[in-house]
Length: 365
Image (cartoon, rainbow, N blue to C red; front, side):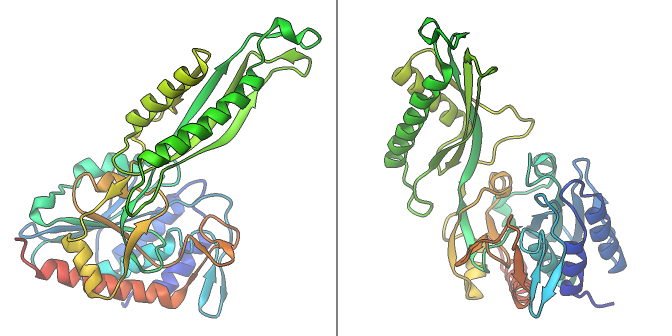
């Protein structure tokens, strides 16, 4: 039975996966089994399927099962498929599944690894990556499926999140001078956050990814309308560039706020069970990058944070897939108008097939 990536994609987009990935995981496992490949479900919830042997490089095709809310039903208009996940990342999944089923590694091993929870905390990838037996010295490589417009992305920003806490002292709003207004202090903190961002941007411009960004996204404070607030919190979003790490950013921003505004200000990263997605970059001469360039793909950085961050610690990793994060009319991925062009999905599958042939054919030197 021949696999039809477009038929699979339309069914996948029609399958909600924003609250639970169970139906989507079952759909993927059923299609693998129907084409003679017995999948397994990893302890972290990832779907794994492999073919080939251990006599050569290990190539991993990775993307994710989950989508953001809300679900947007599939709707096809000619060669365009609209709906949640059409480009992020069920379009890349359809292309990868087609390439995986068609590939005959010969020497080496090919693994399809599809994770849950990429849009939230990456529990699946965090549990999976240490078990994958990846070794960059052996010629192993990872291709992460995301909407890149069929470009191969060799670097990507990281994403950190944390909270600036402003301490004040409560008082009756009729006598505000007897207390310390934390919301007023938050205004000064936001100004300091902006100054830190401008300072770090000037120090940390990356040749491909540009400058990091630091953006206040949520402000919460106050308990009653007639009371001077004793506390206020500002959540910030950091998009990092190499070589900044999550712990380094936390230390630097906390120190800056203390120096600038005193001990009433502090910053800490959000507590989470999995590592933050840190920025990554691949050497331009990596074999996997060369394999994509041989097919005519352009190389560029990726503007969003992805689970490529985890894989890149173990082996050369790139990001590739059909669809776009945004177009000339605005956002696409995560938006109500999310879509993918179906010929691009087919083209992605064909390009992946060529890349896999190249990677398995070449001898590691």
